Image (cartoon, rainbow, N blue to C red; front, side):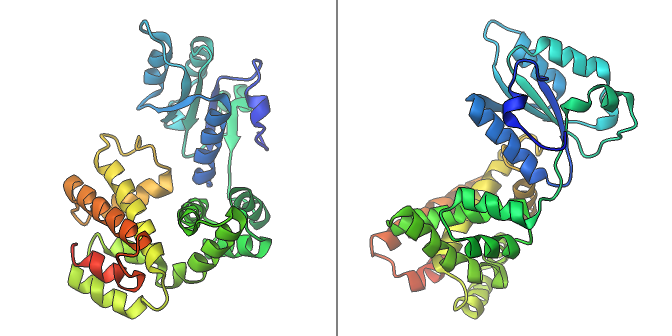
Length: 301
């Protein structure tokens, strides 16, 4: 399928199983999430295709939803795909594969079930960003370029802008533009993301030294909001029994897995999240000066 038409995908005559592949895995995750949202179905991550089939066909209470699983393309066969279409009922199965051989029988027979998503153009990224934020075109272009066209980074950045925007307590269009201006010019200087990642591997003393060198270029509020999200994602990976079934997109999961290599524990993640949340609350209440928030935070790391 060259273009994705979600309305067509939801027609009764359409397949109930889709195989997704390509270089833009963030867009794959976003497409599945949008599809599930339009149907008002839950997304159910499973460890195998057979698990998805069992969830829909066995037991007194059959699950209805959008089942997502990762699979090796060479292990797919037409009988398996036929079985899914015949037994899945009103649910859907999305199979994510790393690569596809278009010469195979399974591809030729189920071509309409295959969806390829590759890196989007800057124009399509800008259009997407503006659909998520009430900002000007030039600001959307700045976001796309700052993120080097990476959908994962763009999703993360949009989320951080939403967090800061809500904290400003202004009309959405004004708040979104102000939050963008606050975050984007400096967010990739030493990169707030890089500094936050240092929190998982460096000592508090080293972090204070690094912060002293970059604090003039980075918003403390951006550090706090991104740090909270980073710890929450890391906690999600730490508590998952399967790294492929975390509920996070691939880019976010990869980043979180890297952070766990510093040896952080579930308990420490929760403790830090609680303290970061407390810092943000104190800033909003005027109890903690924003200019000293990061130094105060790092004293308890």
